[in-house]
Length: 255
Image (cartoon, rainbow, N blue to C red; front, side, top):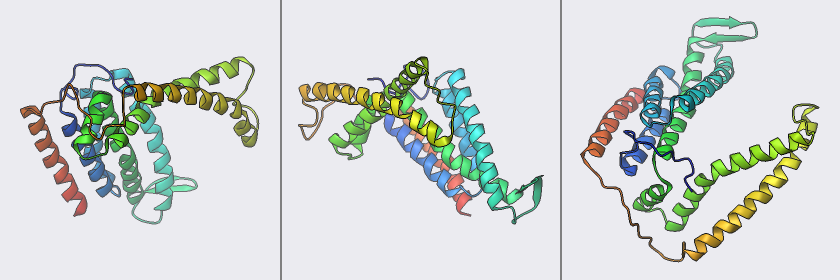
């Protein structure tokens, strides 16, 4: 199972998984601290965009992720700017919703709080083989069974999405109109989709459990790995730069 991993030759692919994991956690920590000020969290978001580009996932996929995030930015702006409409200087008056500078800062900060860690962990999983993800988790003292279960769950995500898409296409060919009717009717129409998807996934999980049992996975207390990543100078420099960059932003956010 390759899961979210994409085989490429890029800067992030060449990094040690431990360095990438620490980087993603630093992005998460800095995003949490600066969540109420979009000006302070903007450099974090830019760094994750640069990471997506350096991960070699392709311009098309990166453009789709960024475009979808802009839609989410519009939603968060309408929600949070409305909640802070009585604070700060009025910037934009949209009839019912009044947007102030404070509301924009909070809305953008909340947007970056969600999207920056999402982009960071997408970069991590896209550039790290599931084999090495499990190895990294065990290096930080995560139990082997838990790390294996986590890696399998992440690896099954593309399979779940594809299975759902296939079932929806088949049901639409049979005349199921998901975009018509009231909200309760639309929800009821998803039952012919949920049942086949769950049935298919249960079958896949059963087959996978047989494969794992035949390989004695989960019965030994400690796993061994044939190919282990090696920490090199490039990883040290990347980690030091990340600690300094996000450390400054953390201090800025705390101040």
